[in-house]
Image (cartoon, rainbow, N blue to C red):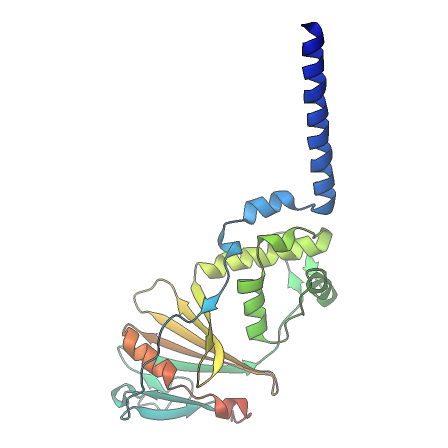
Length: 247
């Protein structure tokens, strides 16, 4: 009987040692395993999908305005009487605005929680470690954080690389509460469509990068009429913007 108990104890001890050894090896290979389980199945694990809505035909009687090389079509009754370049359409129920900026991605700055200052070299090392090309445009930056960055990204990271992962993961948590981004590949343009969450007026942002001329444009639509919003998106033409005609 004592022999049987001693044998069972030895077997249990061996199993525990094997489990401890396995855990140690896994920790050496994947030092951020606890962080992986903390981020898994949260918004950090969410990825992007294609824009889910079928776009309708654009009514022939829509008025047309060009802002920063972007052709925009919407009902004439919503034209901004101020002839504003930034907001060519503006009324009580519809506002369409356009913002055009230099398309550059900042790869330096502080972690707001720890106060640690990250350099461009730190970010480039991070992207190299995770096997991704460093983003060069705003679109690429958004797609990396919202689509490519997941819980698995952290598994092999150490030191500064892991701290940058945490910074990007926390920023993903914040923006996920604000908007839902979609890939858009239409007959009129390729870009991103971001639907804003919350607020009394529904908002949709259309984002397009021009890597040739290093420019980035955002067309924001504030409208509670879902059909009209889709018609406006269907009527957008970025050919002038992509040709560099933004003045």
